[in-house]
Amino acid sequence: MRLRWQSVRRARIRILNRRANAYILTHPLAFTLAVLRGFRANQGLLLAGAVAYYALLSIVPFLMLVVVALSHFIDQAELLETLRRYLELLVPGQSASIVAEVANFLDNRDLITWLLGVTMLFFSSLAFTVLENAMSVIFVHRVAIRRRHFLVSAVLPYCYILALGFGVMLVTLVAGTLQVMGQEHVELLGYSWSLGGVSGALLYLLGLLGEILVLTSIYLVMPVGRLSLSHALVGGVTAALLWELARHVLVWYFSTLSQVNVVYGSMTTAIVVMFSLEIGATLLLFGAQVIAEYERVGRGKPERTRPMSTAP
Image (cartoon, rainbow, N blue to C red):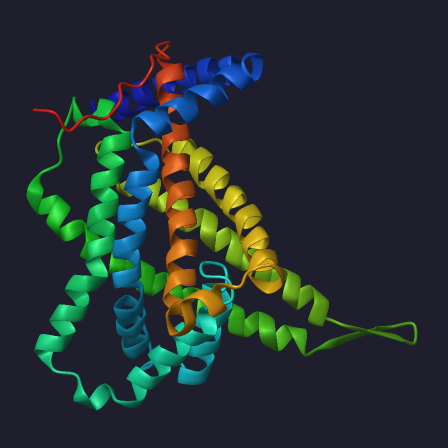
């Protein structure tokens, strides 16, 4: 019975996907405008600001806990170098400052108490809790049908922290292998080619693939109900590509035009990180809005999203 139900569900998803794809191909502008209207109606920028604020509170304690745990299995210098490289994908130009704080914490990890560890774990989970609440606004049509048990919502952030920690370990091991490969040479017919360029390209692709996988997993786990992998992948690829474009613009802006260090002085790092997280959270929620609109179109009901209201 269960297998039959799953096959029926997969067939239904395929039908909805074909309907949505046909609509998007024939009405790309209408679909894009519907996504933008829905994002505006759901107060997407306001939600992104909340997610970015709590992400700023969570990112440093999360990285500290992950590095302390993984330093028992992986060389500390290699771990910090991997974090520095891939944090650059999240907070352009500021990864060195964050990694320096993490390294300083590692040098004093003997001072960690159980109370401090629990407090750091709690702050690490705040961003995921707020992100889940933001997703419930974007996917309000799912919340209206089914609500998540409060115990699941309470445990979910910590499970995700554990999964991300495992992901950091895996990326560190793969990145270390690619760096070793970059030191090798290929000799053929008297010519020698360094694999450094190939290694650099593979390291970048590893980071991009990691972005897509993390975003896809967020879209799979955070919304209420079971989201199909294809729908989550649509949102993950959309958000990752938009972020790559935004990241390159940020790098260019901060390196050529910005005078943020003159205006904010010692607060520059926090302001730049907050600004980067704000843009990242906006694109993350925009990807969720793409999925939500994709679902509505697939059902043949591309209805206009009602504006979010705080009125009783």
